Image (cartoon, rainbow, N blue to C red; front, side, top):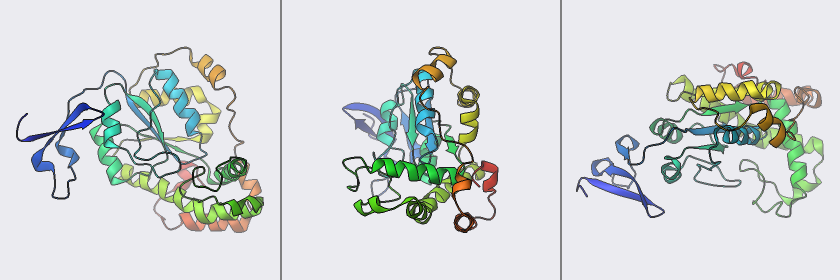
Length: 283
């Protein structure tokens, strides 16, 4: 081995070589100095970066089926924890490609890995009023899960405690606005900023477009990431395997959230006056 190189192993396999001079005193590595030993084949690393209750599970599964790519978690944490792209996971799956669904923000760390691995992320968004009601209904369903209130289920940005089992719909909506929506705002802003600074090339997809024409949206995404559909018939895959996913009603959230709450929601978005959130279909 060249004395100017360090080899990095993962699961007993050699994946990358790092120039010694790229390693700082605290042991961190400058990603610009990483060379990959394993080249990717003709498939892609497709990352669907989405906030919860936006249809990301459905979209990710469809993309996985269409491209015959494994559904793989490219995150450094699982379950209800915050997710960042993981270098070992990326190295492990890089030769074969995959589809990954992550509730992650557009951080500098993620942007550097996206650049290095040639990932074009899909940013999936949904009208915030519909999202709130969908999240409320999901929290109510989770009350029946055995681990409810233990931190093993639910969402990382909002702790679901046993005491919330007594909350009615109105209380849940207030809790979501106070605890969850700040996370959603930062999620949207973080990806907007990375795109604005041209650090990444991302495709923004709305939940509404996905529900209106699933086939067209999926084909547009495949064209964007330069991936080919190599498995089955589009209509058959969408109707047979995922026919049970009808999605939530579009526009119903605004009817169930009163004007006072709508003002509170807009206040959270107002801290970023330069971003036209309405353009993304959020408000």
